[in-house]
Length: 151
Image 1: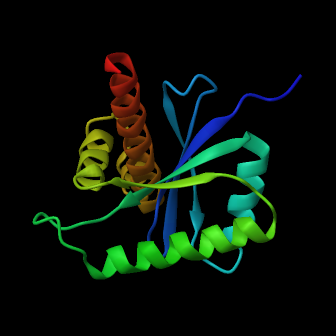
Image 2: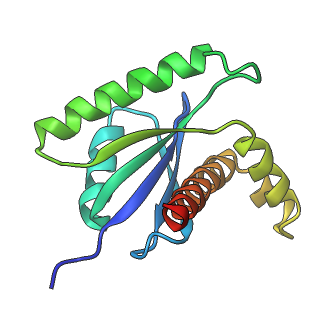
Image 3: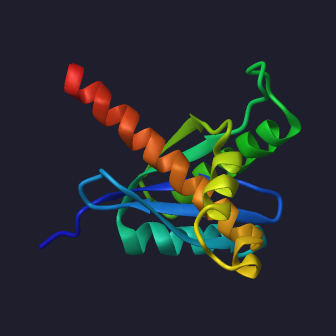
């Protein structure tokens, strides 16, 4: 029996990459342990993509409040281009999609501070990155599922 496909969300950062994966029905997102942005990043992502049977990668697209590109937007575009080339090299077919990520870090930080976790756990920056990825993915899932209802 073939394994059900899932979506992956990536919250790209200079030091850490927030990660979230959907369920097989693509209705819910779950944060995963963040990845370090180091020389092993693409091979770690490749392992996750294969292990979880990822068919779509949603990349948080950071724009400023005026919907203009920032330095981080350019870095995110570079990351996406490099990831696309890397996946092609290994014959991995996954659609890469940008998704507006404005406010997700703030929402993630607010959610964590209200979560009841102890102070040390709340201050783990990787936790915020992965919760941000989870929010990006859930937002994407909710928007695409709502579009499908009306089409």
